[in-house]
Length: 176
Image 1 (cartoon, rainbow, N blue to C red):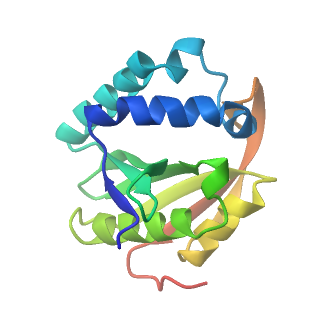
Image 2: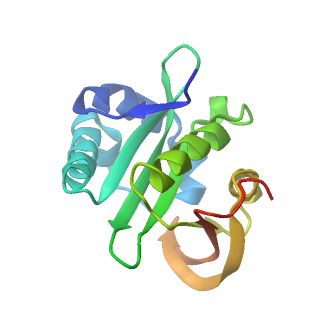
Image 3: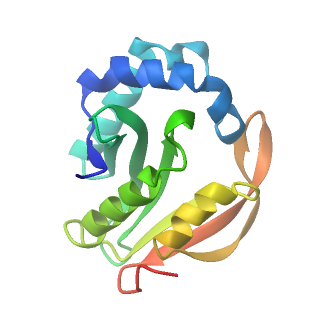
């Protein structure tokens, strides 16, 4: 069974329930979000924006799904560029109750296969908080290489936080 499927606007209610139920769990890894972000209209707006970017060829927005088909998280490919750069950035999250089951690793593997074949990308980039060792393990399992440290890279949980930078090149093996 696949670990992903494309998101649609019809997923807004399920995503709203998931992000609301995981608000405290995700807070240390996310920007501070307005309360509306956790509502069905808020998630519909997020999805609408991602789907418009997808229609323009600048993003992919997929659900990470459990074996029973319920959404367990989201994985997105953003900043897709073609031409000589052929690059994009990946971000993902999985609900607390679905952590440790290999869903993020499988979803990232599926997304990379699509990025390198169907999209013809050369590189996919990622960043993690320095202390987010679980996300770093997901990246390593999918052949990402750590390429640096970006001080005060993103505004997370109300402060500028250092991030480790990672990349996966299309023709590199998918195992560490």
